[in-house]
Length: 356
Image (cartoon, rainbow, N blue to C red; front, side):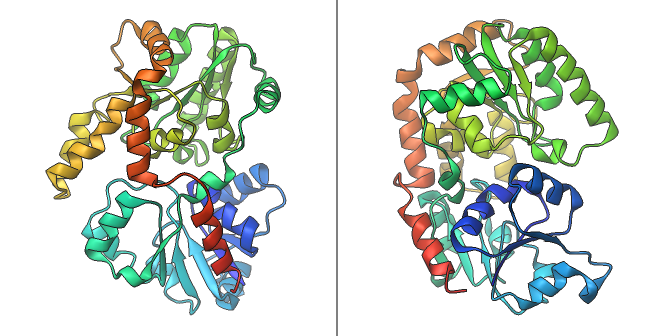
C-alpha cells in the first residue's frame, strides 16, 4: 500500500495525481490540511496522524503497514521510524537547492526530479541512482483549455467570461507581497478585468485572526469593485492557471508553473522579493553567480511593477498586448526548468509505483 504523507496543503496537488494513478491513502498531522483536502478533493481517502497517541493513532498504523511512503517535504525525524521505502516528490519547483538541503533527502530511496535544472543541482550532491525523472507532477492536473470550460468556471465564481482574467499569486510570508499589494491591486486594477486573488496557502489555510479580518475586508472591497474573487483554497490552482490571461506574482514556483500555458506575466518587485533581494539570499547560500544570473532571467518573461508604480493599469495592459514579445523568453525558461512538454515521465513514474 502507498501512503501519501503531508503536513501542509501545498504538497497535496502533486501527491494527488499519484494517488489518482496508483491508489493508496493520505495521512496528515494537521486538521486544517485534512479539511482542505476534503473540500477540494472530496472523495479522497485520508487519515490523521496524532503523534500524541502514538501507535493508537490511525495514521501511525497506516504508515507502519505501508510499502511506500511518498511525501512532499523531508520530514526525516518523523518518517525514519517507519520501515517502508520512501519517495520524495517536490510540490514546488525548488529553484534554490543547495548541498545542505539535498543532504536532508538522504533518507529517501527515490527522489523525483522535475527537469534539467533540478537534475543538475541534485547530481552534484546526491547518488544519481536514487534520482528518477518524474517531470513536474502537478502538470497532470492542468486541464485542457476550452472556451466552454473557461466560461463555465468563471461564471461559477461570479466573474464575467467576456473579460480578461488577472490571477494574483503571491509567495507566503516573509517574502510575499500579499500584505502590501492585495488591497492595492483590488483598488487599482481596472474594472473591465476579472481579478482572482489567491493568497499563499500558508496564510489562507492556517489563518490567524488578523489574517481573517484582512480577508473579510478584501472580500468587501472586492464586492464593491465587482468581478473579483478571493480564493482561500476553494479552487484547484491548475484550473486558475488555465483561465488566466495574465499572472501576477512575486517569484517562487507560481511564475514558473504559469509557463505551462505560456501565460503573459507581471512580476512584483517589493523589498523582500526584488531581484536584488533574491540574489543576495542565494549568495548567502553560496550559490554560483552563473546560476543566479540564469535564475533571474525569469524576470525577462514579463513586465515588472512595484508597490509604488503609479501607472499600474497601463503596465498590466502592456503585458497582455506584448505577449508575443516575451514568448521566446518564456519557452527558453520553461525548457530549462521542466524539460520537454508532455506527461510521459509522470505516467512512467505512476507505473513504477503501482507495484507497491
